[in-house]
Length: 432
Ligand code: ADP
Ligand code: ASP
Ligand code: MG
Image (cartoon, rainbow, N blue to C red):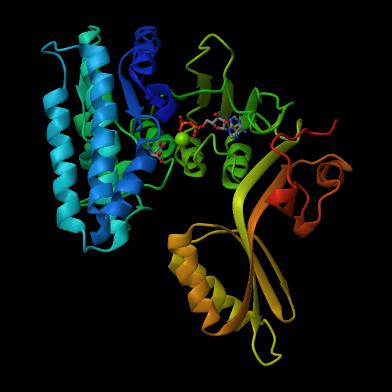
């Protein structure tokens, strides 16, 4: 039965990191093995900066500099890995950079989201080209596959929806039993017309789940720079502990509320086929992983804390002393859907509807402008949303001590409070 491995940006950030992949893959002798890979390090952020420069005629120099710096980073990794041996994929990578440049010229005036997908996908196309060549050089037989041809999506650029039947058929046909490692890109797909699409930032975990679902895999392993899924980000909470085992549903809740370690769409396709997900460390592969499967028994054992930074609080009021009634709520939520935004917390009263949103200017600014056309809108920036799953008595108050909460919400399993980021510490502590 198939196993799916997923390696994120941190695990292939440079030549040394790519070298450390080899023993992890060698240790897994069973085939088929599908390996899904992200772009190297922070390449996707840099491709987004390149895109912004490409769309602005006055920033041609910056565009060239960004492109050259991306080329240099990838060349340095290839030189360190291959020297000037004939096994270096330098020519193929250089051709991919030329394609990237040509796509920018072609799509400069296309809508932003389409231009994004036709260009940002190159991060993964390039990283997988390098890693496939490296594994082959290490005598691990590896076939490179183009996920744009395997993962069929609609043309909702930047958040493409999967066409499951077509995707399952092409994945099954092309990734049939093989003794080679089947290496492909996370995050990207393609339309029927052959346009590239992307599945949303951090979407490679979701890609791994798509391949696993379509191949009825035995398990998915996502290799991270942490030993597993913790009850809080171990970089922000000094006493975070690893969760040994939680359910698909609970992991989805944590991811949905902002636990960045897993993309929230990952668990659905795995749950449907009862495929377990292991979160393991590429730095300490012998440490016990976190296991996510159907078992719900341990979900409420430990409270979990999640921080969402860069939040904005919008208060929307009808003009002329009228109610915030259902037609108005429908109107506001409709505009939210149109803007492709998700409210992380909402609150309503007779003449007010308030929403906590991610501060993503390219989506938020047009939304605010549209609301201001018909409502009175006030806005608070630089906020942090704290969510606690399964809080113990008094825990939220202890975590909030000395901080004013702009908004709060609570139900049987989840408590949330919104704070000014300036009032929040860099390092948090989960109360006992
Ligand atoms: P990838 O390399 O796959 O993109 P990410 O950087 O997205 O990996 O995810 C790993 C990071 O997620 C960790 O370095 C950690 O700081 C952060 N993180 C946030 N919340 C959690 C959590 N609950 N458990 C573990 N890690 C978390
Ligand atoms: N490279 C993409 C990103 O950085 C996808 C991923 O890493 O999961 O968002
Ligand atoms: Mg990531």
